[in-house]
Length: 118
Image (cartoon, rainbow, N blue to C red; front, side, top):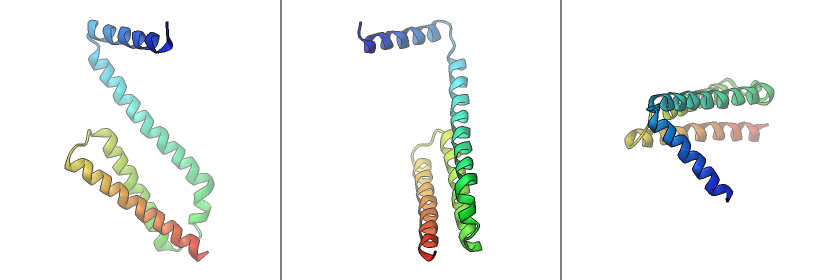
């Protein structure tokens, strides 16, 4: 038996058990918890990167540049959290994408400007 067929049969068996024992609510709860855990893992990795590398560099920047970079990162984190918690569609998804793009633009532009001045 090929690994693809075997894995599909395993998934079908798991899906059948969920449907037969009426465990959709538990599955939705587990999915929500995994979504939150993924968001927290990303935040922890970003914090460790900032603590080990970026903090020393950003401390040497002017006050305005520090405010811009931290505001852009903070708004991006809120935007990603909004994206992960709510199932966005239509205008909400467009706004989330535009806000994320603006945050990335402001952060990258500020970082490049400070690199050029050094």
